[in-house]
Image 1 (cartoon, rainbow, N blue to C red):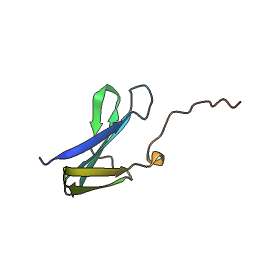
Image 2: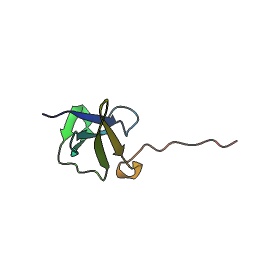
Image 3: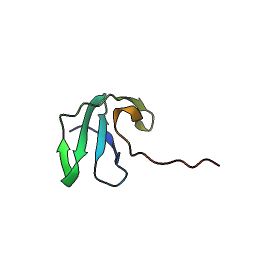
Image 4: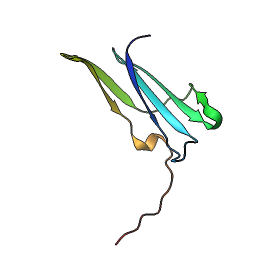
Length: 80
């Protein structure tokens, strides 16, 4: 396995559902969705993008994860 960095987002807001994205040095990308009881769905294919770059200190990664690719909890917003 190569070097990589990943992010997991709790889209449910209460630890039940989530989405994970990972990018490896060289721009290899994987993603997954998480279902209740920690079941992983590796067949999920989210609409996100990422790139890596070698820098003087090692390497860096940048992710573009649009919120529209996952359902988010509805919250009431108070105005005023």
